[in-house]
Amino acid sequence: MIEVYLLERTTKGPPNLMISFCLFITPDLHLRGSLVHQLKLPEPWDPERYADIIKTFASVVRHLSNLKLFEIDGCESWLHLDDSLLPALSSLQNLKEVRITSRAKQYPNSYNMVQFLQENYSPVEFLNVSLSYDGDRRNPFQLFRNFSSTLQILDFNTATFSVVDVVYPRLKTFLLHLLTIDEIVIEPFLVSLPNLTSLSLGSILGSANGQDINELRRDNIHAQRARKWSQLDIICGEVMALYVLGLQCHVHHLMERGSPLRESSLWMWETVVEDTQPKAITLRVGFCNFDVDDVPLVVPPRARANVTHLQLNLDFNYAEVDIDEAMESTFVLLRSLPLVFLRLGLEWTDFDRQDEVDTDPVPIYINKIDANPEAFVHPQARRYGRSVR
Image (cartoon, rainbow, N blue to C red; front, side, top):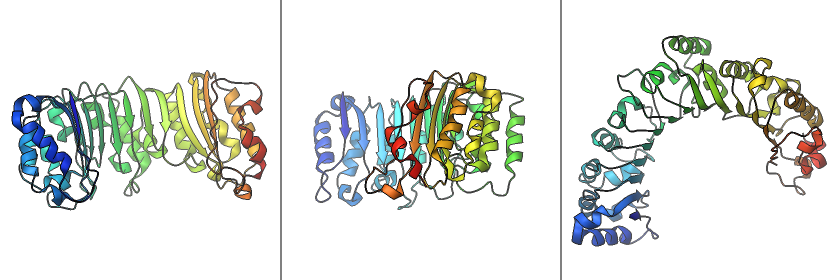
């Protein structure tokens, strides 16, 4: 098995790695081409350096009959060089893992990598596609339909969703990036991904375009009356996104991502936790905009009996709070939970002593509960905690 990573070490002169690769394969295209199982094309510093070899390279690609992994970074930089490269890539029929990254719309038809996705019929199991965002969004359930019977993990950005008559029975993990709130519509997921187990909702762009988040949530809850997942292993996202999604099933691991939890979004977080009844929670609380007395509410009473695993990061950066009060409120929460695993982290910058202490966040890793609250506190937290501003 041969892995080919065509990363040129110099930015001047001919692309020697690609030239050498073509010279090695060309004497016996069928035999040597079949030995290549992985091909990675990093974004070229100067695409024009490849102008004289790209046509030969495309003819070599057509003979990589056993290629399993294909990765291309800066796809438009490659595809504009010669029209023969795209059909050569589309002809590959045994791919299992595909990674495509579009850096910028520098050339005409920079979305022509979409044509590859629509014309390739490989049994792809893992697909990671990051297209340049210029306001043009695509429905992944329609776009990747050629891989619907085999795809297991999908990582995609710049998506929009509508119900399509395509089902991905083996797809278990879906990671999304760059969403707006009004694009969080659960029905297409339920129709096309009946066996989903893990869902990650990426960063939220802008607002809900004037739409009421409660109305969006009600629509998603209503859609789950006809069909819903029995449970999910992992759901990850920003608080507002999780709230709008309106999951009405059990979630094993609930993970908040993005900005720290604030007082203004606590009510949404409480609703999500009560709806999903997780066993494990990962959460970051920002005391810059959070009442220390409300820490116990990050796991509402109606959900506490289920929570046995907790990763809680306490962010004191720019927070005018008493760290002792915050920690005591935290221990009120911890004592109310039947925990078997805890990872507790403190983050802050000590501006009064920044020349003497490390200003990076100080993590705390605890694998068991101790009745003594001091056991949870990192030595630096005990020493400098009262100077937190």
